[in-house]
Length: 514
Image (cartoon, rainbow, N blue to C red; front, side, top):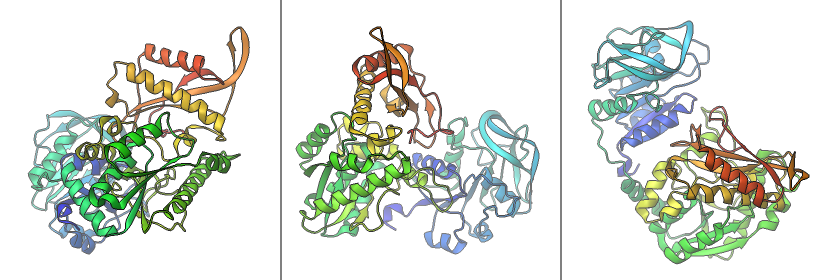
């Protein structure tokens, strides 16, 4: 472990995406966090030498057979522990308390009433709003623990044993709806644990440069540049580490956003003076995707074609043994881990063939999007790239429901261009909108255009607000903006006669349609 990562908090994952959110909240307090399986042993934790441990939420009940447990020896390591939701119940269950099922659980916003501030709840009001998601609750505390707070349905909503260094909250402080959630983390990390604030964009860059140099040595590296935030920051970071050993390749898949090639050329060839190779592979991609409608199959085909093009291109780059990818933490978790079910394969994670000739360099694999943007700004990338909206690795292929053809790609690209233009002209805070884009559905509907009957595609407009893509809420866009987008798309994009707006949050939906 590199020196800059020596101060870290371990987040034990019990099978819910809350672990990722908790890890991100810890990093917002400038403390490095690492997610590990709940099956980790006390000895393995000792070897990692964390300054603290967080037991995350999970979907199971501690009282059912097969529920994930922890090595009970972790409670005696002398390392401060914070249990959240399932983690709090596990602490109670393991240490002699009781966890019971009530007549009803608590889901969503709930009033938390403090009876004692203790250490973990210091600075909270006597009554505040928290976010709950549980059916079971702690009904009896273990010996030596102090009750701090309760809710209508949860007696042990917060409790602690400072002498043992163990703290627990039933609610979710990592969720923005919990009023004093950030204060809980501040109390735990900086007051109780005494963590310093060394995890910054500068430290990430220094640590990454060291690891990249150690991994690749004098070998040459190629990087796939899509023009998106992730691949751009990954390229700039690797270039900072190894300079001319990096060779970037921009593959025009025919599934890119409007003007993508020009942005990539201008930024990386002209500004950063990086060796850049452009490859037009659109014919190959459309041939591969002909007749394919299954989203997972699309991703696999795109991933395989992607790596084959790079293998072919690399033959002209002497000694290229490594491939840079802009894989992020959410990519990894959504593709499935030992503890969490796979939601969808990510192009950067699950879409690559097993027999590829490259070793992967993934400098952003442990980072969330906001951290990536901060690193990009520190590296000198322009705001036009750093604050670009996220774009899926498979490109427009996963924004075309059904078969991907050149004609359908042009339709959704033109519609998306209009969406971006209208957003740019609007008075909205563009950074508040995580993503706004067009989706082409695999249906047609009847319309009237020019006094004649039309039978054409609908465009689905999707716009969401989020801070990390783990959860997202649909954006309440002004009606006049929606009207301008709709009018322009129907008037300017051939084959479209209807625009609809997706008002579904994540969960239950994902942000992208496929």
